[in-house]
Length: 247
Ligand code: FPP
Image (cartoon, rainbow, N blue to C red):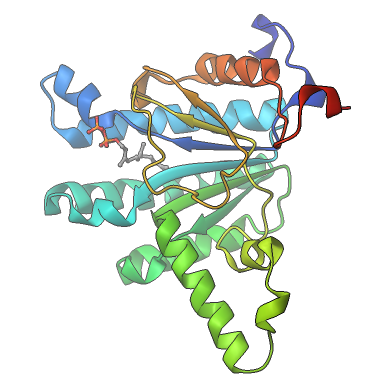
């Protein structure tokens, strides 16, 4: 399928792509359907994007599936969405395992119903040997939650005499975030025309290229990901330097 596109320059492929999958509710509303109908169709987009990412050699893909703020949505939507997330993971885990995809979850999992936590733990174990694509589900996640838990853990270590305050630097903070095992995303995509970060990976996106598209998440397919990658490859990443200083 990738063959129908101009080849992606592998040397300039982001290692880590993070996506805010937005617009499911509006997509459903446009069709006179319930919001859950939009989430249900969003699953097909997830499949397509995961498959393409693995094929094209992206190493890390983080999907913002449920934010800590999403718990405040109407109860029926919250429970429907939880059920969908857990059922999808249960249904897809064998496929993930077969395709070399390792599943990770980041977020405040203490908020999840115990059965959902159990299902997730099993899915994580089943794919733990894989290394081709790391699929990171941000579930009950927010950037402020992540920073808060990192600072608390660092404070505990300081109190225990295991960490000296003067030794804390940017790397120490990264090492205490939920994403400690992953490199920072180089590319962040948000669908549905909203231009916000919405409490996603606040610390980790410091140097990410941001890509916004009007496409609603349930319509997002591999060709949209391809367009985002092509756009990324045109960008000059300067990290605060001047163009002339770049290699
Ligand atoms: C945002 O759209 C989307 C969500 C809060 C849920 C995303 C979940 C999925 C796409 C299901 C994915 C399944 C797996 C396994 C990851 P919105 O409801 O905020 O849309 P709106 O802005 O149009 O109201």
